[in-house]
Image 1 (cartoon, one colour):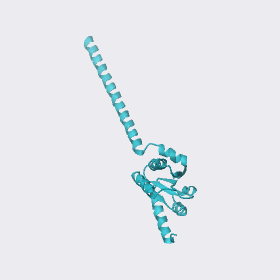
Image 2 (tube, helix red, strand yellow; image 1 turned 90 degrees about the horizontal axis):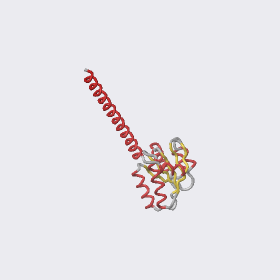
Image 3 (cartoon, one colour; image 1 turned 45 degrees about the horizontal axis):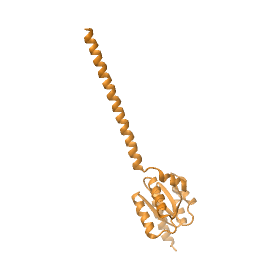
Image 4 (tube, helix red, strand yellow; image 1 turned 135 degrees about the vertical axis):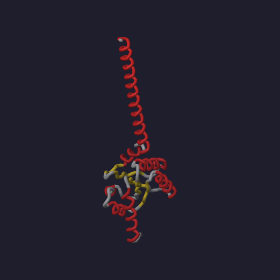
Length: 175
């Protein structure tokens, strides 16, 4: 059993992790081997996310004064907390895909922007395009919009040039 000092250290570490987090996903990783959990953690590193396994009471203490206070509704039994720091969809996507791949474990839910997410909500979050994909589609839309404006301006300038030419021809014919 961990000493009180060790528990305080764990709570302090968890509080620091929760302070920077944007999304927290709660999963049950029962039956996973150390190698599987290590693989999962390495996958999460690419998403700027972490997976921590801690006693539920320590998680509840660490989240008491944070936006993740609602996690207490999801922490029962063996619990793994996946915290995402940038794109909220990325750790959800990685978690859901990994659990499908190994055919073990389950997502219980999560917390995003002080709102409790069900397991279904986390799966829906996992289906969203990544931040990079959204930014590239926005940039593409802006680029095509700019091209459209340039095309319209070119057409207007061309029409004005034709109009000036016709007026000039009419004036030379009249003179």
